[in-house]
Amino acid sequence: AKVVGPSGEEIHVDEWGRIKVRFLFTRNDDHSHDGGAGANDNDTDSAWVDVLTPWAGEGYGARLLPRIGEIVVIDFFDGNIDRPFVVGRIHEGHRSPTKFDHVGKLPDTKKLAGIKSKEYQGEGFNQLRFDDTTGQISAQLQSSHAASQLNLGKLSHPKDKAESEDRGEGFELRTDQWGAVRAGEGLLLSTYKQDQAQGEHLDAQVAKQQLEGNQNNAKALSEVAKNQQTDEIESLDQLKEFAEEIESDIAKFNKAMLLLSSPAGIGLSSNEDIHLSADGQINQFAGDSINLSTQKNLVAHVSGKASLFAAQNGIKQVAAKGKFEVQAQGDGLDLLARQGIQITSTEDRIEITSPKEIVITAGGSQIKLNGSGIFPVTSGKFEVKAGQHLFMGGAKSNYILPELPNIQYAYSNKLDVFNLFKPSELKNIEYSILHNNGKVKKGTLDQYGRTDRIRSHEKEKVKILIGGDEWHYYIENFGGSKDENTFIQFLDFLGAAIPNLIFQLSDENNKIILTGTTDKNGEAVFKCPNVNFPLLSVKSIIDNEFKPIIRIENNYVREITLISPKILKDIDLFQDSEEKGAYRRSNYSGETSFNDGEN
Image 1 (cartoon, rainbow, N blue to C red):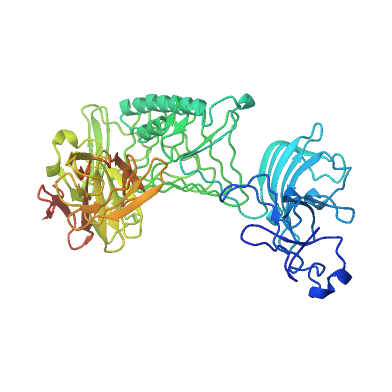
Image 2 (cartoon, rainbow, N blue to C red; image 1 turned 135 degrees about the vertical axis):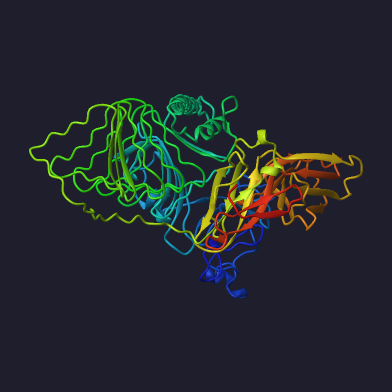
């Protein structure tokens, strides 16, 4: 029989996937009594006919619907001609067998197997193709739109005959349009070998060991720098924490990280730009050298401190052309050497200028130059050798000092929380500053419990989050039924309510089952979902990510008080000309007082 349907339609089925057919033995002359029904080549030719499928479940199974014009084979239940059903389809002589990639014909392409569909009322296709050619075995999942393909095995060009040219080995995921790879719990990209897929899915032990080894080497070098009275590397703890997120025993990531790992090198290349951006730190560690080369300029800006330390072999800076400038625009400049200091100009003069005073001291002797005169001092011999000795009347030397830029931020402030902590607790307390434009700056409180001065070109109110990461909680009311409400209150560690805090509950598959917001008292009331041990998470105001706190036993727990490890403060940035050097001090009552000095 031939599949039929209304004019202009290509696929004609009912809600059960049944089709209509015209039996090929029917003739128009035999069906003229009923408007030609049965021989019209349309949906009047038969009742709905079931289609046999290899898999038919409730809402699942295999679905390959016959299309209008295809030839199907009909059988009858129990030989009853009133109960036909489709058992399969055939091409017959006038319809070509499946042509994968729109090329080739049988028997030349007999080693190919699979499924190929056709775009509805179009020329595109989707295909799952298996190539069992000796020495070229491969599989392909393809959509003709944008040539989007997943190719596996011994890759070769589309076959229009028995064999085709090789084009690679392994796998290829490609498209002419856009692509995205997403893994919500973490992604490992590695070129380390796993023969015959014998290893664990996320086996990153070699990468973990390499990160830990670099962390140990960097820590040792940082200790040397510390002993030489220069700056330690700040990111050692972050690198250690990153490596610890890679679990060795069960091969998984504890955070949604992206890990690139290769035994033979990683290359990044672009004809235009490459951008690296992180709200935290960008760390580079090398067992050998780190080399930088550019055909134009190398420009580095830091808002804090720039520190460079060489443990051996010195530091060398050379300007082959152009001026070499060193400026300390806001403070002094120190040059210190254990041995000699040499200043030489090979073709011009050396000028040393100061608006106040120049003092040269060596071995107990001294020459002092200032506006009052020149004053040599020595406990030994004062010897002057010259072809002439001329002593003339006084004269003043005029000079022009270069002007240093004075970078001004119109508004600033800082926060002092010394009274909220014990002195022994002030070490390594971190804080995050959230500006109105979403920019986040992180730092560590100093020994007096103060943040760095927060500066801005515009007047604004900034949020400062201070403290650790570990929440504390206590639970009451273990009784009650599942139908009772659950009460949760969120407090900061000073006991103040945390209003407008967004929280969510998720199940063991990380599916979100409830989302809510605390009221002005920091409280939330809800019916706990009937899920075992739902995970309670809160949304961070800094990065807008949900941070997990505890799992709730919904069968028993009815009241929970959660104590945040952090303090949240809002402070205004003041115009420096109005309140220069001012800062805000917080006390245990949660109030904020004003101090008009830096002490």
